[in-house]
Amino acid sequence: MSKTSTKGIWKVISASSMGTMIEWYDFYIFGSLAVVISTKFFPSDNPTAAFLSTLATFAAGFVVRPFGALFFGRLGDIIGRKYTFMATLLLMGGSTFLIGCIPSYETIGFLAPLLVLILRLLQGLALGGEYGGAATYVAEHAPAGEKGYWTSWIQTTATVGLFISLMVILATKNILSAEDFDNWGWRVPFWVSIVMVGVSYLIRKNMDESPVFAKAKKEGTTSANPLKESFGNRYNLKFVLLALFGATMGQGVVWYTGQFYAMSFMKTVMNVDSSQVDGLLGIALLIGTPFFIVFGWLSDKVGRKYIMMLGMLLAILSYRSIYKEMYNTTNVSYKTEIVEKTSKNIETTKNNDIITTISKTFTDGTSYTEKKTDFANKKESQSTISIKINSEDEWKLIFWVFIQVLFVTMVYGPIAAFLVEMFPTKIRYTSMSLPYHVGNGIFGGLLPAISTYFVTHAKANGKPEFYLDGLWYPIIIASVCFVIGMVYIDNKNKTNHL
Image 1 (cartoon, rainbow, N blue to C red):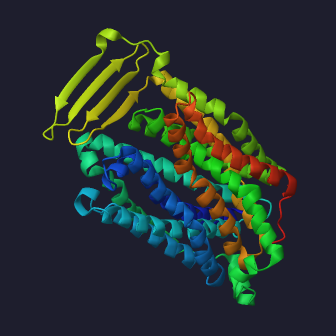
Image 2: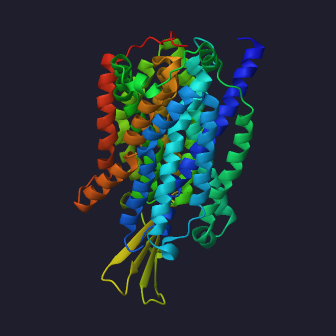
Image 3: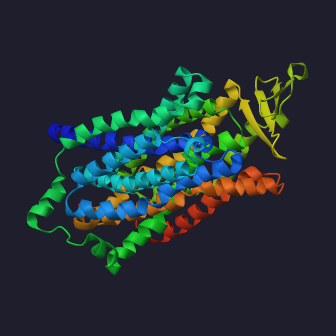
């Protein structure tokens, strides 16, 4: 590549990546704040049901992503890549900002979760059109033989978006008191996104159309009906299904296990302090993110297939061992309590609810706080546990999350180039977007809700290793995908379409 062309591709990547990163940030602050949101937009009398409802609303945004892929993919193949993903950026930004403005359940009742669900669906539609446009746009600017390397920069945006969402939340928590953050401060990350979206829109506005698409449009070879040509053509449909069941389905569950389920597991199953989880997850993501580029680059040299399949296989074989080690890190039954430092405090609220707070300290520096509320008006109680871990245990968890992020980079780093190369220019946006968003949006996006349900059900049935039951979902899905991918996917990188 010449210096001029290198400078040009970096400009394309910067503009595409920034917009995509902001969209992921917008999408993930909802998941990052799921525990807080469950208390704001859902009835508070059943915390477990409220949390599961929040995860279901979070998942709803993923379920509609394939519809966004079809709608915006069609537009992208007809009118162009640039204008389509400018529209998705504005739709996403507006929806995110408005979620931060919705009054709580206590104020407007069931209208609150309904409005959140509607905006969440709009977010999902927008994201369904964004990724395919950005990946296609970069790939169509990249030189032959280097698609994996250049598109892997787009692959970092999802992880960077999650990282920035965690850092913004952490900064907001540190600036505000715990009470202020709980009352209104949790809305700040939603409001901040509108400024970021505005800046990204101005940058994207000055971008040129993809040269490959511009050439096709000038020659009159674009598709008049991308949906029909993508899914009505049996030959092309075969590749769409292969992309889904042989690659993106497994990639999706590995992605969401390594990042979102790991976060949810530490907060709700291991009961680690929320701020500690955000911090250690942020460090693991920061260390792991460069490997997207490494494996994207490597896929140009050795092929996409074996890198993605190896990532899936390692995840399948090691998830249960990794999560067992993680759980035992904070399992207080393995720690020695300093009995003389144990305290118990009982107070009565104005509603005559009795709140019992038990605090424990352990010899390794771990602190444990359990708050139990016995409601006066109901014959039931509610307990919350918060565990603050020592520095050594923090680094142990960072290591185990980093290993999972490494699996993510193996399956996700090469996938954009893999998908782009499977389909011709005139139907590429539509054809690659659907399998990507079904694999990630449905198979991956449903993972937190399904896995949390499995864990909750196993715990209620008294299963000793209940905390591992949530892993059956990603293990089974990734195993099926691994077998199909190994048998039917060709390891040879295809360049004839570009």
